[in-house]
Each structure stands twice: as C-alpha cells, then as structure tokens.
Image (cartoon, rainbow, N blue to C red; front, top):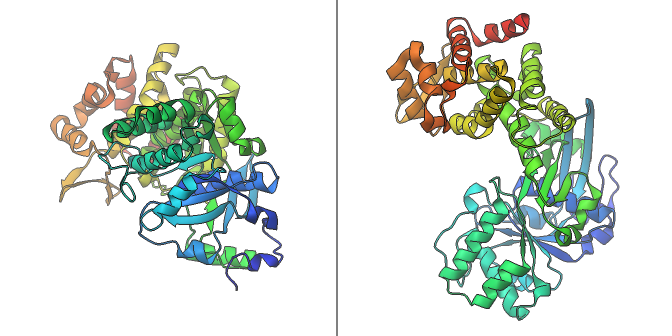
Length: 501
C-alpha cells in the first residue's frame, strides 16, 4: 500500500474527498504556530473546505516551535493528511474522509527562522493562527532579536516587527491574529503580552502604535474533539478502507465550532468562514463561550464523579446506561439551561444540549472520565458554582441533579496520600486524584470526617469564593446523597434518583 503524497493523488480513491490540483498551488496566506491535531482538525480543515469551494484560496505555512520530533512525516507526504470524521449528528451516524491540502510548508523555528521571517514579509500573508497550549500565552523575559526568540509571544513579536520594517509601517500590512489556546480572552491576553514585550525590548513607539492600531488580535473559542492518530488496529482498518497509508491521519468528531470575535474587516479577511456554519465571526463570542462552558464543560464536570464511581470508564459507556444518560440529559435541560449567567434563548440552549448528547454518544471517541476529573475542584468552581447560585436565586429551591454532582465530587475526593500523590478507592480499586487542591480537600476529610465534611467543603470560601452552605437546602441535599453513596453505592443512588422522580 503506497504512502499518501502528491504522486499517489493521481489515483482515484472511492471513500475519500480528494483535493484538486489547483488547491496544491494556492498562495500562502496563513502563518500557523503549532502542528497539533486540533489545528489540523479545525482551522486547517475549514481552510481546506473553503479552498475546495473556491472561496478562500490560500494555504498555511506551519511553524513547529520545537525541534523535537522533526517534520519528516510532513515532508514525505507533501504536507497532505487525512481527516476521518466520525460521529452522530441529529441522532444519525455520519462518516466522512477528506484529504487536507491546506498546509504548504512545515518549518522548524530553530532551523528555519530566517525563512519564517521571509514569509512574515510576504505580501500574501494575512492571518496568524496559534495553538501553543495554555502555557504558550504567558509573559516571559525574551529577546525579540534572538534566532529565534524563546516564547511564542516573543516569536510573534519578532514576526510583526520584521513585517513592520519591511513595509515601513504601512497600515495596510497589519494582520488578523487568532489564537486558539483554551484560555478566556486569549486574543486580548496575547496582545497585552506582545505590547509588554515590545516595551521591554525597547522597540520604537511608532511600531508599538502600529501593532495596537493596525493588527487585529481576536479572542476565539474552539470546540471539537480531535483525539489524534487512532490506535494501530483502528488505523489499519481505516487505511484499508482508504486504500493508502497515512502517517499523519487524524480522527475527529462531527461537531465543530470556531467562534472568533471580530469586526467586518476581520470577517472579510477570514473569508473561509462563509463555507461552514461552524465558523462564527461575531463582535461578541460570549454566548458561544457560555454555552460551551456550562452545557458541555459543566455537564462533564458534574457527571464525572457520578459516572466514574458508577464504574463507567468512558463517556460513551456511561451514555449507554439508561440512568446515566437520563441524568446527563435532565441535568442540562432542566437545571443548567435555565441557570446560565448570560442572556441565552432557551431554544438555543436546548439545541446546544442536543448536540452535546450526540457528541457524548459518539462511539468513535474514547473520552476517559478519570481524565475529566483532573483539577476537579477548580473546574467545579469555574464552570458550576455560577450555575448553582443562579438556579437557587431564580427558583428558590435546590437543583437536585447539581446537588448529586457535588456529593459525587466530595465522595471522589475522599482519599489518602502516598509518595506525594493522592488516591481514592472504589470497590477496592485505587484511582488517582489528579487535582491541584487534592491535599487541601483530603485534609478537610481527615479533619471533619463523614459527619461534617459536607458543611466543611460547601462553606469553604477558599474553594468556591462564596459560602455555598448558605443556599437553603443545599447542604441537606448534598449530605443525604453523600451518605447514600458511601453507605450503598453510586449506582444505587443514581437508579433511585429516577425511581423517585
């Protein structure tokens, strides 16, 4: 079986959408920092889709920030790769295979910095995209004149400064910059860091004004599960179906969203947005952020302890269970949808919830509940506490399903220390408590015991920023659930919840 590359594209493959020869020669319009699967499965996928429809007509130069791993797979495959989209949409199974030709070159920052700066001065360059993980957007001391600078903001500043000099500060040569790192206000934070670095590097004030006034740093939100290269047995099966080998093959779910905060100028530059409803360019992405944070992430967090303590290893396995599936659906539609701290139409929230249910049921995504419990405490504080407070204020009653989620959290966090790490136990089997507050919460368990732990945790303003025990009826509901979980089992509590309902 031959390897995917430009030469092998001369063959016709039955089960895949192939690029046309014209798309392989399109001008380079995008500089992308990062080679990861999220970028290849979302922005690069959207650009490829637009190119196939003759809408954007541009390709991507990718910068690999580290020398680790090299670029040989990209080189051997002429930067082509396959995205295999698998999942459920509107309750129906959907499968699609597409060869993506959006990437023109992959350069390594340490080896090709001059080449990267040359492209920074290209008249065809319009857009910069990044995904350097959450730690990539942070301020570090950096020398913008290094070859290359160490940090991502330093590299970006060097690119912008070089472009500024090459065009004598022309306001027409500013760029649209869209970070996709999963932090709130990512564009705003990146801009602030770049400006601060420019000052610390004593760059000319006219350049700093050019960065501030003629470059558009856009806050953005990405939402698509792209697990990456599938397991060997699944990859072999896919390649047999496709008819060629692909060392860069990735899988993704059907659902996709890239919400970008920008004006009409930004919208004009990001013309690939016209070809897919998943790309939304809007003056305010708050609605999209809240829907994802509350209905997807909040549901994940509240469900994670319940599902894991019930013995379900993955989200899909939990959704195959009648009681767990009912919990997830009712939690979203009856409690979270009406508690979002943002002006959201109820129909929009319910539609988003239905999409989430489809995504949770996707048989091709192995999403482990134990991974979702990482930093459980801070996720509850950020994603769920505002919902809990809103619900209690609006309804003058306790959200029973959220209360069960909190009880499961408290049960999950009952653990002990071993070699500097913390572990809990369920049915005699040990599991890791990967939470930055693990020592603190386990300490509360040791101090207060089962009788008083609910009060101690709910009232702890260090954890939640507010005293949750002041919500009338919440402590009683959480405590009853916790007692039943510990005395009987999580499975029993879950099934009795819907008998009672």
